[in-house]
Amino acid sequence: MEANSTANGGRSLNTNHSCSLTEVLKCLCGRSTIAVWELGEPEDIFNARLTIKRAGLPIVTEIVTTLTLLRMAQALNW
Image 1 (cartoon, rainbow, N blue to C red):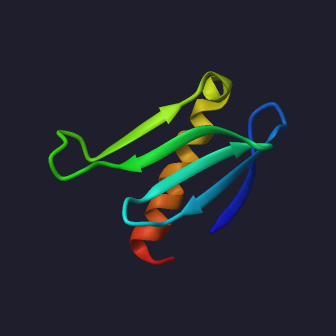
Image 2: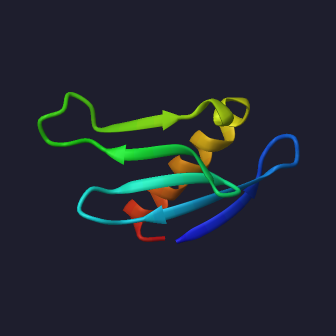
């Protein structure tokens, strides 16, 4: 699943969704990954980990919103 949204400031934010044994959602800006959401392991004390690189900090709201909506769509089979 791949989606595009426009971030605050007019830059295009591409999200690339890939599924494997451990689920991962990535936000890409051009060819650079600016954020990664990963499902936690059963022994972890958290359910998921969100890593936002420095380049993604100015658009953190758009990143979190996009990844949350993608995860909801995946979980609800939209």
